[in-house]
Length: 164
Image (cartoon, rainbow, N blue to C red):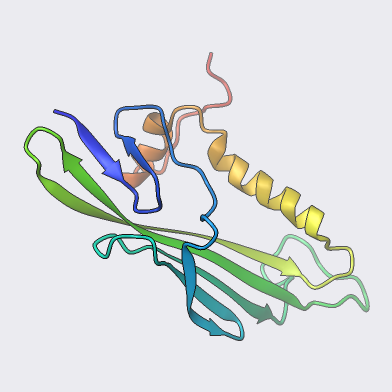
């Protein structure tokens, strides 16, 4: 039996292959469904109707960025910050190439950045931070032994830093 997955995001891959779609949304495929101050939702208009996918970006002010943080402000330092959400929602279509059976898998993922409003924060520093954040997932060498247990509710992960 062979299963194939269509992500609906202009990418398909065989379940048992090493190919994993990793790309940014293609320009021109997304249009605003919602565009209001503090929130935008874009939908992929190139997708088939049975596989909707969307991107949501939201930004809300934080009055005290230091609340529950491992640092305290110095005298006169602003405590204002911003919470920034990036969310992707997709529906994957799974097809059994032998029987022709089809079923769907809804997926949703998001990243939230909580950033101080400070002149020291630059785009390049935020880019480096996001790279480190996403790199914590990309560093996983064996998704089957690390991420799949999480899908099944196992929260005690094997030590991947010391293979010996």
